[in-house]
Image (cartoon, rainbow, N blue to C red):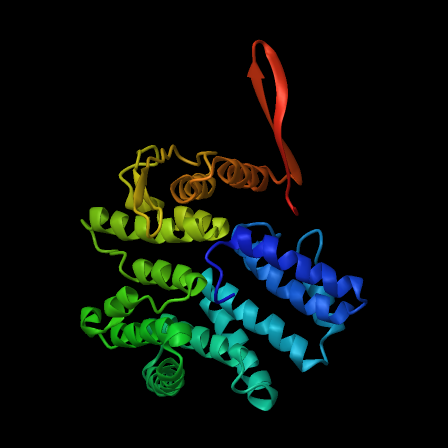
Length: 343
């Protein structure tokens, strides 16, 4: 959850771990792992709803009923649920999840990575709800934010490569709710130093860009720029459900529904690649797939490996388990490559 820079790759690497636990008859361990897998699938838009873990292979309600008295498995579920609810801006539900996660973790799991994840998303959720809080609630929120921020700062000081990004984002959010200039915070310096774990960076940069989307009249151009940056980051991460949510929420930033916009897909440390994406209303063009293809083209020099990566992207986009590349030569078609999703 904290280290993957590509949700598709995360799934392909993580799925065998779930299968292994099943094979050795440790079904409860496999179920715990499945919750983490479903978090990734929800972000990809592969579950029944972006804030649901349920799909054809996993029943969230059944999981909660089965493990309702087992705090370890409750912690897995509620902490990941908190992350998902915050990502999709369901802030009130996220707050309820944060309070439940805090109760569980405080008793048995303080100091674990799940404690850090809960602290991070709890602070972000409090910041998101601050604008609508009453005077008394604002005072209480500020106190809670100070406590959560202090914990993140301590973790960041001891392990900056793992926790500096989360600490800096919460610091920036606290500055925002107090009306301070976020540019005075060392967030950009932290970016240059490369502190952010990739997956955390997907949420961090995306949400940070969204916070800067102007809502005042006449700010459409600036809003499009921040919106585009946020959508780009989520697309490169593979969070298709979040990309769709952004497209629906910020449609008004464009002059008209049929307008065409250009997006730039960053190809990583090796350079950048410009990728034109035409939007026509609710276009069927999959921007996430295009972004991933751009990444593959920019980052892979071996033709055979590049072909395999592109085929896996196509298979994922089609929702298939296997695919074949058929080329025509001299009027005859022949299969040049075959790829299975789980290979």
